[in-house]
Picture (cartoon, rainbow, N blue to C red):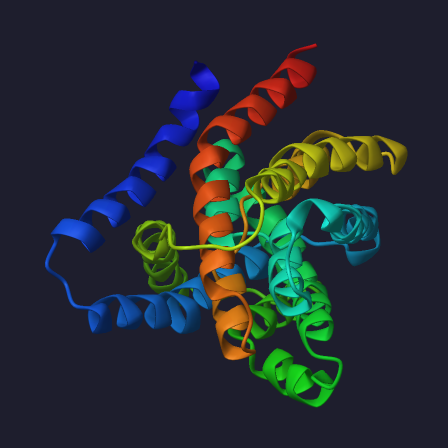
Length: 302
């Protein structure tokens, strides 16, 4: 119960987004503007603010990054193994595979901040930022064999990647943010978490989908149950402890990123099916994340 109460404010904001989208009489253009503001301004500010202030040793962070990368690779492999359960064509299947390993950074940062404060935000921000290029490369590469040039341009302009690299460079160079800049970035960071979670809720949608229900359930189980278990084992094998161990497991337990839907639609894939998986994993994560958090707290207490 205590673990659920810790996560309740974050998922309450997601629920508020659902209610506002459905009953708030706000036009689609409003929500598109909110998403762009969070993605291009507030969230990059949060990542830079967290990473620039944190003492980061990249060599020490390498095992955490390795666990994150291997966990995503496991999700990709498990999704491929489940293809006989899907009953889908090639493009629809390629669209949904990304839902087994992509992660919602907004929820990850919010949960990490709730549990571990600034140190948690820095650790989760660094891990998510480092994994964004790999997640995008895997998704785009699987959807289109000739998408490499476009992919490189998108990565070079991705605000989360830019903010992560800038924050890491600022920290490792031993620089310090000027006093007046700190409260400014802090206010942007606070807005990022609140509006980011509301935007996640507003983006949830359950539409028509093709394929077998068992295949959809399988992908949800891979993302929310199998991957955290894999990360747990890998984190132990790589010797992660404390905050790094918890970050690796919580990262793996995050629901699918809403950007998976955008990518599927842009590349002519199965948008409705991906939207269903995003919505299903986000709703189910209220339960599964609570379970994984309880397990982590039990280990820490032991």
